[in-house]
Image 1 (cartoon, rainbow, N blue to C red):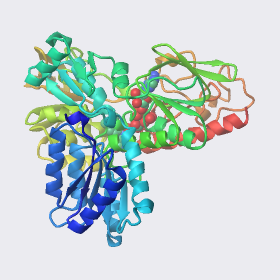
Image 2 (cartoon, protein in one colour; image 1 turned 90 degrees about the horizontal axis):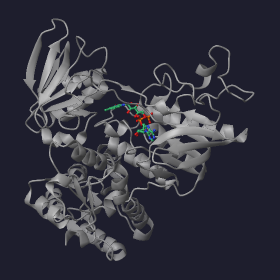
Image 3 (cartoon, helix red, strand yellow; image 1 turned 180 degrees about the vertical axis):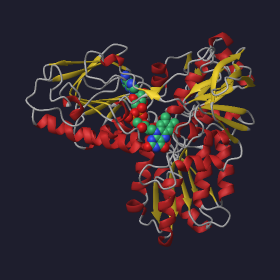
Image 4 (cartoon, rainbow, N blue to C red; image 1 turned 30 degrees about the vertical axis):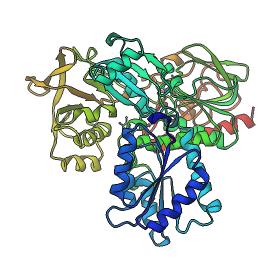
Length: 555
Ligand SMILES: Cc1cc2nc3c(=O)[nH]c(=O)nc-3n(C[C@H](O)[C@H](O)[C@H](O)COP(=O)(O)OP(=O)(O)OC[C@H]3O[C@@H](n4cnc5c(N)ncnc54)[C@H](O)[C@@H]3O)c2cc1C
C-alpha cells in the first residue's frame, strides 16, 4: 500500500560515482526510515517522482547536483516543486557555482546548498539533512499523506474544504463525486452523494462536511493552546502576526499566535510577490509565509489554527483574548495583526454563486480548473493584476474589468508592463458587473459600461473579485479606539488633539504602535494609515515586539 511506504529522499547527480556516494551516505543514516531513490539526470528523476506521486507516496528531501548536461539542478527542482511542493530542496554545487545557488534560493525556494565535497558527512551533510527532515516531519504534509477529498465541482462547501487545505499547504487528492474511486470511498465510509464533501485520511478516518477546526485536527494542526498564560498573544497569522511571533519567540517571550483560518493572511494568497526585499526573482506568498511559519515554530512560538478571536478585555495587568468557540487565554501583552478582508461585490446573484464560480481573492486552487476557459477578474489594483498574470497561464482568455479609464492610477508600473506583454489578457475599462446568473453555478454575467449605461451579457463560469479590503474589527467595538473605517488607531494618532484616549490610565502617551488599551499593540494592515505592504507588515510586527519589551520593562 502506498501510504505504508517510507517517504523518499531523492538524490540526483549525473556523475555515477558521486551519485552512489551520496546515496550511500544518506542510506547509512536514514535508510531505516526513508527510501533512498537515485537518478542520473533531471528527466529520469522527474519520471521517478511522477511514479512516486501516482503511488501516493511522499518525498521528504530532494538533493540535486547543479551542473548537469540535460537539465540543471535548479531547473529540476523548479519542476519537482510542482509535484512535491512540501519536499525540502538542497542543491549540491561546486565552489565556482555558489552564485547560481544563491539565486536559486529565491527561484526555487531552496532550503540549503551544499558545497562539494560534503565529507565528512557527520559534519557537513547530516546536520543539514537532519534539520530539513525535522522541518518536513513536523509539517502537516508528512502526516497527511494520501488525504482524499470527494466533492462536487460546483459546491461551495467542497470549495471551502479544498481552499482550507490549499491555504495550509496540505496536499490532497481531489475526486469528483462521479469518479469510480469516489464511489468506492463513499461506500466504504457508509456515506452517500448527499453527504459531500467527504474527507478521507491516510489511516481511513473519514469526516463528512467537516468544519475547519475538524479538518485542522485531522491534518495535525494545533488548535488548542498548551498553556493559559503567555507573555504575548498575537492575533492574526499574516506577515505582521508571523513577524511578531518570530521576533517575540526569538527574543524569549512565551508567544502564542492565534489564526482564524490559515497562516499567511493576504500575502499567502499572492501568487507572486515581486517587491519584497531580498527576493529579486519574486517569491510566492505561500512559500514566503510557509518559511515564516516554520521560523516561528523553530523559535518556540505556538501557532493555533482555526481559532477566531472575538473579544479582548483586561483583568488587572493581564490582557484576555476570547475565542469564538469558547475559551480564553491571558497574556501580559497582545499584538493585533488581523489585517483586512476582501470587500464583497454587491450585485444580484453574486452572493448565491460565491464558491460556485464567484470567488474572492485569488482562489489559487481553482486556477487549474480554468484551463481553456474565459476568466473574469474585477479590480484595478495590484492584487487583481497579479491574479490576471497567474490565471493567464491556465485560462483561454482573462478579462480584467475596471471602472476607471486605465490602470495607471491604481496598479504598479511593473505589473501594467507585464500585463501588456500577455496576449490572453484584455483590460475592459469603464466596466462593472451588475448581475450574475446560472443554474447550479455561475454561467452568465451582465456587464455595464459606466459611461454609456449600456449593458451586455457574457457567458462566464469564473469571476474573481479584488475590489479592496476592509478590517473586520467589529469585535473591538467599545474596547479600542478605531477610526471611522474600523482601523485600529495607535500611538501619535491617539493624542492628535493633545488629549490622551478615554480610559487611558498611564502617565505617558501611548507608544508608537500601542492602541488605546496599554499593552495592546496593532501591526500591519489593521492599523490606521498603515502602508499595506508585506515588508511594512513584517516590520511593524518586529517593531511591536520591541515596544512590548519596553511596556513590560516599565510595568
Ligand atoms: C492578492 C494579493 C497580492 C498582494 N501582493 C503584494 C505584493 O506583491 N507586495 C506587497 O508588499 N504586498 C502585497 N499585498 C498586500 C499584503 O499582502 C498585505 O499588506 C499584508 O499581507 C498585510 O499583512 P497583515 O499581517 O497586516 O494582514 P493579513 O495578511 O490580512 O493577515 C491577517 C490575518 O489575520 C487573520 N485574522 C483576522 N481576524 C482574525 C480574528 N478575529 N481571529 C484570528 N485571526 C484573524 C486572518 O485570517 C489573516 O490570516 C497583496 C495582497 C493581496 C490580497
